[in-house]
Each structure stands twice: as structure tokens, then as C-alpha cells.
Length: 243
Length: 64
Image 1 (tube, rainbow over the protein chains, first blue to last red):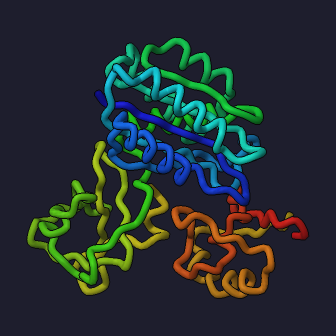
Image 2 (image 1 turned 90 degrees about the horizontal axis):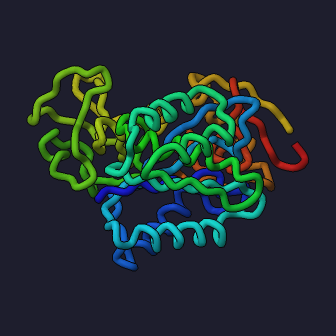
């Protein structure tokens, strides 16, 4: 079965980031044979005066395959992991969602969409998590306000159309290739033009030094745009920030 | 805390300015690459102590 795990607010100015902590936790889950990751995604939450965050207010989530038989044990492990490894002074929140147990998926999706541009109280996050089957939400230190973003991160990962995959990759020394070749890469499930313009498998794409994919339609999507010579190129770091 | 106004369109045009500032700053702390805003690593926009706020960022180093 699929499981989504999301973390928020686990860092401080000198610690590792929340995404790195989630990756390390997921590696331990994989070592135990409990979870096979489909990649960590980053979800940008709003920059607002009344929302507390360290430097950029993003939530990190991962989706993967697991089994009902290990769910309790895995949840306990994650809770202990966050309690032990979240940075001092942080307000960590952990959310685990089992999509197939959800009795009201739409309510959770609506919460995630609202969290993209509104201030949400911690009580509301807990209230929703308690009403829904298939949602675990817990805080592990500080004021625990990370639960707001953790629930949002899980919701946005479930929705399949927000954020970008953590990490960069290259195609070796290759600086230009076809859409077809790009689709052969394990980290690319789709190649899409930013404006929705139709592209073909034989179209050539100039590659940036490091590639990153967006999370759209529940897929890892390499975004491309037109370049000055009338061909196509991948997006640069700044352009990818909109995802 | 120092507030620096910055439009997303300014990031490229002001990259050199923030490179110089970061190079001279003893408190520069490289953020996770995931959060970098420029390709030049030592840059205020790639520092863990810059805090994005509406319309710009705050420098969170203690003496700023």
C-alpha cells in the first residue's frame, strides 16, 4: 500500500534541513524493509508575517510503498526519530497518511490548498486529522506548530500537483538530448513545456548543468521552455522556484 | 535584523552585490542546495541565515 510521510519545522540555523532529515529517516525505514521511497518532495508554504518559520517555510513529504503489518511499528519509529533528531529550538510536526484508508480525501486536499496561501491554526490541523481515518499527526518538541505544515505537506503530496522533487541530477556530460532520451532516465516520468506547448519525442532539449523535476500529475516532470535559438532548454534554478 | 527589499526579478541583476556581501561576511552559512537562489554558492541568497519575507529577505546574523 502507499504511505505518505511529511515533516515540517525540524531545523534551526545550524542543523541539517528538514528534507535531509526526512531522507535520512526514510533510509532507515528502507533498511528495515518497511518502506520503499518514491522520492522526497518540497512544498512551499506561504511567507506571511504571522507564520513562524526558520528561513523559507517549506514542508517536505515522501510517498512510498509499505505494508499494513508494519504501520504501527513504523509510526512509532518515525515519532522517536523526529523526537531524537529534530534540531533544538524547532517545533517539529510529523504526519503519516495512508491514502487507501482515507474516508474523506477531499477535505484533506482542501486543507492543503488552503495552506498554500492562508494562515492556519494548529488546532484546525489537529481537528481535521482527528476526524479523518488514515491520518496520523503528532508534534515532537517546542510548540509543535510544525503539525500545520506537516499535514499540508502530506495533503499536497497526496494531491499530486504541487512542489518539486528534492535533489539535482545530471545526464553525465550530456548537454543536449532528445525528449525520448530524457524519458529513459529513471528520475523523469514526463517532459513538459511550461506553457503546455506540444512537444514530440524527437525534439532536442539543451540541458542545464543540474536538473530538477517538478511534481505534477503525481509524476516527476522535467519542465522545459523555449530558448533563444528557437529550440528548447531545461529550466534554471530560479525558474524552478515556482514549483 | 537587516531587511533587504528584493523582487524576484532583481535576483539576477543583484547577484554580484550579494556575492560580495557574503564573501565579506563572517557569519555566512551555506544553506541546503535545495534552497539556493543563485548558482554562485557564496551569496547572501544561499545563506541559511537569510530569511525570506514578503518583498525581500531578512539577514538573521546576530549583528545585522
